[in-house]
Amino acid sequence: MANIIDGKKLSLKLRDECAKRVIDLKNAGIEPRLDVVIVGDDPASHQYVNSRLKDCEDIGLLSITHVLDAGIEQRELTELLDKLSSDSEVHGILLQMPLPKHMDQDEVLSHISPEKDVDGLTVLNAGALFSGREGFAPCTPSSIMHLIKSTGVPIKGKNAVVVGRSIVVGKPAAMLLLAEHATVTVCHSRTVDLKAHLQNADIVVAAVGVANLIKGDMLKPGAIVIDAGINRVDGKTVGDVEFDSAERIAGYISPVPGGVGPVTRKILLSNTLTAAERANGRR
Image 1 (cartoon, helix red, strand yellow):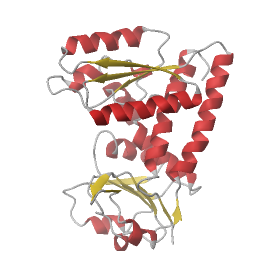
Image 2 (cartoon, one colour):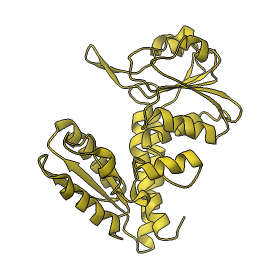
Image 3 (tube, helix red, strand yellow):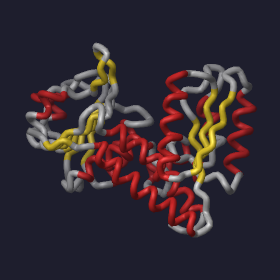
Image 4 (tube, helix red, strand yellow):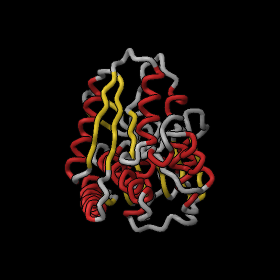
């Protein structure tokens, strides 16, 4: 049976580390601050933002929310982002997605300073990740790497398969694994014979959004399996990996829920504090 990678336990450790960093910054006269921008009244988006605000409050991180009407012109949103990007008291900017359909997402994101793009969504931060320069990777791929490293198994030289090629999870996860010297294969919905690729994988990252796609008999015995999928099946949240069968084959496995998700939330806090530290010459 696989060792379960407990994301909730790892997130508590990250929370404590972040809380200490907040104290260190405040002792140096620096008030770390995250500004959250949300457009419209989508209940799920507001629930997501409220949970992030609670995370900030939990560690003493100042967070300010800007709620804009769904019918505003794109120019009003970009003007706000320009203002926050130039405000030295703001260290992190989180723009809640999705945006209203009449807005150009890429154009809007370009108005967020890369140094404050703590969600790692701007093109400049994507380029930094691709070229190995300093920047912010998206929070979910960063969480995936945190879970892999928590096993203590070296990544260098391992065969890794990422199932999914989205710009916010699959592709960044592949780049982060390459940066740790893994040999990386990216699979997707058009991959022929997914099982053949997975059976050679020491590390599997599932991020394709298809419930229970990966079965235990598709895995290499002892593999590290990180499930970043979130799917609703019969009223329950399940991942892209069929947990029960995979648990019998894998060496380590992250559950859904309780794996990637809790750590992802704390990565956002950590990135904001990193931005504050960099802005003040403390990192």
